[in-house]
Length: 397
Image 1 (tube, rainbow, N blue to C red):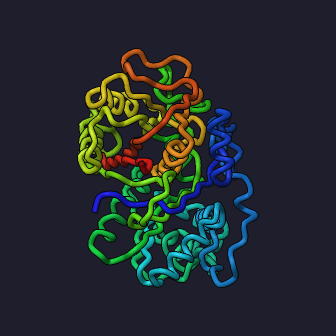
Image 2 (cartoon, one colour; image 1 turned 30 degrees about the vertical axis):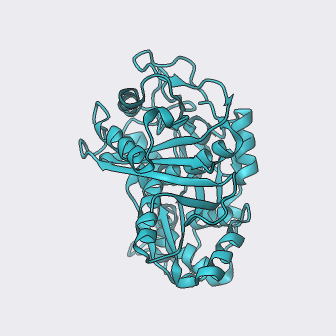
Image 3 (cartoon, rainbow, N blue to C red; image 1 turned 90 degrees about the vertical axis):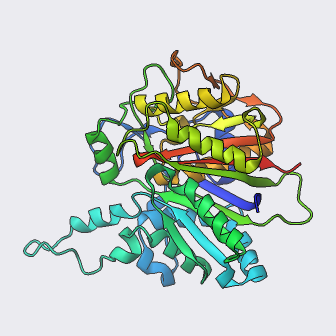
């Protein structure tokens, strides 16, 4: 089994709720990055915050899961007919035959931060209404999603930093190939929290302006939040001409350094090569690359070298993080949906905020949108510790 069908997909991020708003933002080259006003954060940086998350209300039976991360997840689940598509899959296959595979990094840490402010002044104990398992726990978002749809199949969270929600496509694919499930809800959810913002600031990785991927003067990331989901199934008969397929997955772990990539992008190149091999494609067959493109000096440099070594300087590419911010564990899922929209709409989205391309990296980096027929696109997601994943998507012929 090689190809899988993305029979439904959706995303919510700082550039829009749902596919129509997301596509419009990409076409209009509209960024969702704004000066940070999140909670009590006092940092000179930009964030990609999703408006209205705090106003979301979970259904009463799901109250134990109430936190920003799961509210953001529910926003996405209830858009673009996605919940209806999942419920139809349950009707076809049964609740035990639909798996859940979600990527996240910080999960519901914000809920613990809020609880910590209410700790007992004498004992320091967290408040009795704090539910670690349902809110903070890394597994919380997969557990929430399973309960939301009353699913009883496998539920898995992948937390491999910024490659998390790309790697879930591989996890789901293996489960489908092994015959354990017939469909999979895959995706990524990560929400803003103080730990992330102050943590990346302590590493000296936050930019004081909207991030500028692959710019000669890039100086750090802009953190965003997002929720993105896709329903993966085996190929139907007949296959709609607009159908988006997962053709290949490549994973590697170069383990070069705990927070820095291999300087020559060795792991990134291995992941891209393996994704192409699984898809049965050559580098020349890829029409567009959605780069990981975090806008830090070392990450963009390493990825650029890997792309040049494998694809040369002709393949059009860009990072969409100048629009959405770096959504961390949700980045792979969000950018998978962006790739699906690109394929269906023959749109190559330009990178935003980049003014002077790094001359050391002779990439065919898109500074303006381009429209042309697309058959195959590749999306990169690379995380701390060298956890790399590349995905190849294609449009049905």
